[in-house]
Image 1 (cartoon, rainbow, N blue to C red):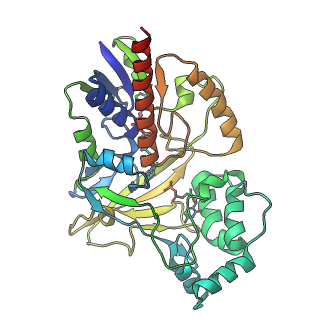
Image 2: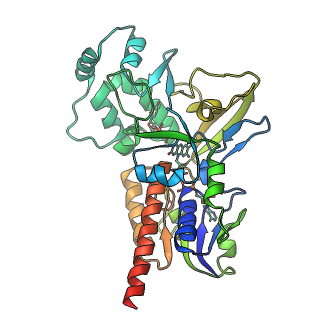
Image 3: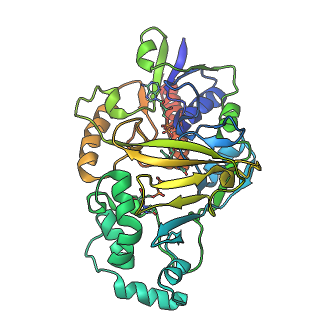
Length: 371
Ligand code: FAD
Ligand code: UDP
């Protein structure tokens, strides 16, 4: 008899499995329909021997000391500050938009103070910042919004930024200094030997067992367990009772090129050209030295594996109904990006999973003192 059946071997499932086994001595079975553990953060060496991220670029960053220290039990780190260029008007310019972006784009030599005045002169006043369009035009005006955000967003989501919550484009800040890092979190690092190696160390425990290539529905009735941790799509769990929750998908096209460097930055975004949104060159992320290099193109899709919840009011309404059902379902805990329909980064999923573990142990403590 297993104490827990964990559906999904991504960050959410793995943290719970590790904590329940190591922290509480529970017996855990992780079931994943994919042929590997790691969920979307899975990485592996390709045929050329280059470490790549199968499901697109994953860069670890967090402001949470707790999350960083927790993961540090399972990996050493390589310090890494992520940088991105956007291909706009025939130039490769820093994104997030900063002082150099504007000076290069317009052939100017503004100072930071002058740039603040420039932004103030082009920004559109908004009573309320409600949508992803509002966020950008209220800071940098319509022209920069059109060049850097509008078409990228339409390509990525198949929606206009005016149809998406503010939180989507608010992920990308605007700066008046020359800081060209994509993230400014206090901890920014990549697992020294990759994510998969880190996951293997997390799950190296005699109480943790795996079943890969298996949908949990094939085994839930034949494998005895007490409680379930579910990290798959929440609408699927309830047989789409309230309709389908939209999840955005991607198709990844991986390529290996016979030269050491392909592009001048880890990621190049293509807001206005091509059917793909961005190209990532993995060696920048991993620090690997190799005579060849591997890249991945991301083509947004409406069908396929669910990768992104789509943050907009009508979807939040549908999710609310599923959340009420989930809360009323005994012995099943819903956690992670798909099961709680949240556009979470890896560190947020780890924090959510650690919080759930604390809740589970607390309710068990209360139960046993009441007995
Ligand atoms: P997942 O990793 O999706 O794991 C869920 C698992 O459940 C999957 O392995 C799936 O196969 C399994 N599953 C689902 N249904 C079933 C079923 N019925 N039976 C059995 N198994 C099932 N975050 C960052 O912090 N930094 C980044 O740079 C970053 N880049 C990203 C780039 C892309 C292209 C994407 C898509 C995401 C990115 N993220 C990034 C987000 C990150 O991937 C997630 O926060 C994290 O992986 C979510 O973990 P999870 O466990 O919730 O879900
Ligand atoms: N975005 C954009 N242009 C860019 C980069 C981002 O319009 O050059 C918008 C787009 O809507 C994207 C969102 O900002 O989906 C969040 O970007 P992020 O890089 O965080 O996306 P992720 O890495 O999660 O795919």
